[in-house]
Length: 220
Image 1 (cartoon, rainbow, N blue to C red):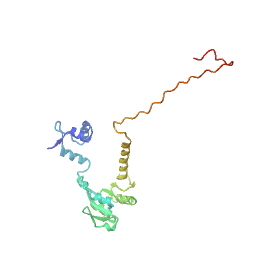
Image 2: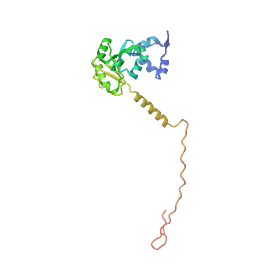
Image 3: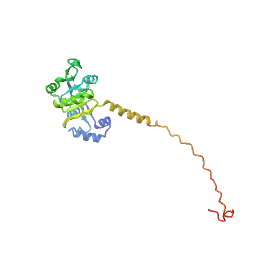
Image 4: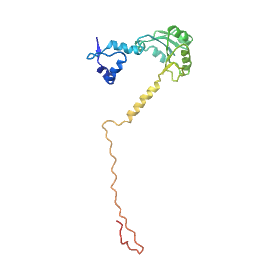
C-alpha cells in the first residue's frame, strides 16, 4: 500500500511539515508515525472535503471559440464535473455536436437546468449578453456561476460568482516582467561617480582701516 510522509508532502508544497500535519488532522487524517499517510485514503479525504466525490453537472452557455474550448477540456471529468449541456443563442448551432455533445438553443435553458439538476453554470458569451444569461441561470435555480465574459455580473445574495479574466492574468505577468527588467543583473557592481576636484582655499585680504592702514588686531 503506497504511503507518503508529511516531510515529503511539505517539501512538494513548500510548507512546514508540522503545519501540514495539523491541517490534515482537520480532515480526520492523522497518518501513522514512521509510516506516513495512506495515499489513496488521503486523496479520498481531500476530494471529499472539496466536494469532488460526487457528480456535478455543469452547463456551458455561449459556444463560440472559448465555449467550444471549454467543452473539449478533459480536466472537468477527472475532477467530478460533467458537462451536462451546451447552450447557445445561435439557431445555426442547434443540434451540432461539440465535444460529442449536441448544442441546444437558449430557449431550452430553463428546462435543461431542471431536467439535469444543474447548480453550476459557465458563461462564455460576449459581455453584452452575459448579464441577461446570468439572470436566467439564477432564475432557473443556478447558485454558482463561472464567468468568462469580460464584464462584472450582478447577482442576488446566495449566488456565488467566480470571474476568469484572461487579460488581468496577462497584466499580472506583464507586471512581473517589468519588475524583472528593472532589476540589475546579479554580480554587477555600480560604478562610483568621479571624485569632485579638491576645493581651493581662498584667503581674503583684510580691509583697510579708516586711515588706510590695516587694523591693529587681526581676526583669528
